[in-house]
Image 1 (cartoon, rainbow, N blue to C red):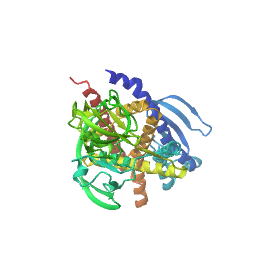
Image 2: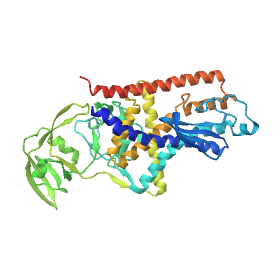
Image 3: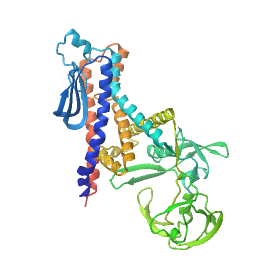
Image 4: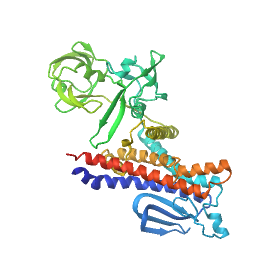
Length: 463
């Protein structure tokens, strides 16, 4: 069972390699803000349970790595638990009370609690800022090629239109569109686009798609029937390409197939759809001169948007790169980083709201096994794949902890908001009940996500 073997040999090591620094960043955010207010941290732990290794610094803080590496905590002076939910009730000296967490003014406690999630979001912005500054920001113009008889075509869009807004969201680049495909599977969305300098509005009723990948993760999304507008230029060939055998070379411009003009690259599959194994006449341009040749498209098998495989005809060529690289200064890179983190944040909260309101299936929740798989697979994509995963997980860790659920940072902030409005803290009994409810919710969510992980693995080996 290679899936189980790779889980322990590849996925889990990368999971801990990615998770541990993010937990440190989160807890250090709490610690750093607390130190600014003079609050004493008794323990800074990466992981839970028995201590494996640790040391005590000159300020009296015990820094340690514990046996269960799924999270961490900072325990402040006077706390009764690792979550700083209640104080221990033990008498403190006047000097100790000045340095205890629970004696601090409301704004200080709120700042300390918010420091953890904020540090994860800031960390993600800084990583993206560095990446965009040194490597540039990928950018594909939102000028589209429309699939014949597809949802966009039925909505009146044409190839060459430039998408301005979709689903109420501003579209700056084509890379913004896939996010909406996964956020609103099968949902009709308003669209605004430019044609000939004029703004046109309409609605797209997409095709609902549901596919299961090789790791048994289910993806539900919309097929809008539009792609980036890529010129019909040969960028290269795949193995056993009939186009290469016919004499085409990289840089050739495809002009006609069986007398029909080729306007953009994604039109090629439409023109040879029913031509598998049959000769087609191809006109192409090279160095300003037109040439004609005959090609026999090969039969391949490819899945449709619901994962059902069927025969397709291919020339086995791939296009020239359509993605540009935008290079920014440090301020522009930081602005791009903030924009990307904001986009990931809104996607997370929108997805969670859809799950809560039953608009999205709970089987899309993933737990530690699915995250471990993602970490392992990201390693195969090189350092950029790992970096993208670190950024995504840092954002998720930050925004998840801001959910207004007791035991999470957002739950504490909600209690502080109650205290600010009412002028007094929530009663101890109410705090205890809410924390128990929050604990049950979080544990239930974790168990559900882990169940989904295990179900996904077992289903791969079902008879």
